[in-house]
Image (cartoon, rainbow, N blue to C red; front, side):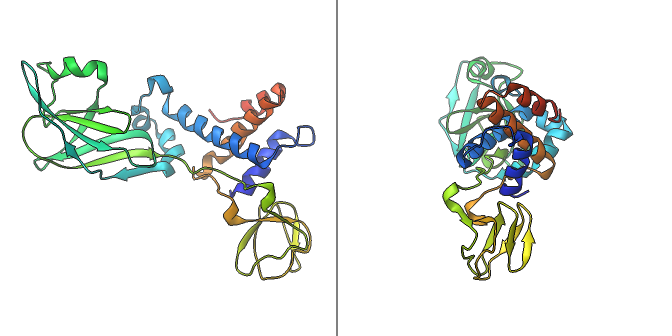
Length: 271
């Protein structure tokens, strides 16, 4: 669905014959909030996030696969850390600019490929002294910080590359603004693509809401359109877009106190 198709679907769940009229900016805010809620629901509780869910549950991967990216980050070795029992090297890399959530991390140390296990700040100190679990080049650990990742590994060998698989930040959805709308008799620029925001007639053809119209330089006969480049649709898979519309509707209806209608829309969201 393009952004205008999505707006029409949200309007259907909002039941605009009864609900208040919303501004375009309010659709944008609500739908982007719905996207964030959807991803966080799929990946698990934010405070107790378990990325393993992404590997274990097929439906989670099916619902988020369009956001998966793989990066080959630049690795920087830190200063050797030595305690009474063992030594470890911390190797760091920054998050990609579009990083949203972790999926997996593998790396090559002295030609051997291995994957990293998670650790945290409170566990790291005891881990570095643990006889059975301390970091080695075959058993490395990763810890997230504010700007990137640290891989804790053994004190020998050379780490040459890493493969960081993650969820990227979803596209910011927008249906544009009211100022972007072009009404009847407005000229549609040749070769540019527009979306009909109402049932519209152009060059003798009638277009449904959300349909694409390619400008020819002629005036719009009737209806209303918006330039497609003034909109951005969601980059989540088609299979989840209807549920996103329902989530958006729930947010909007609750914002104006229509709790019964919001509950009705929420009850139809796929589990």
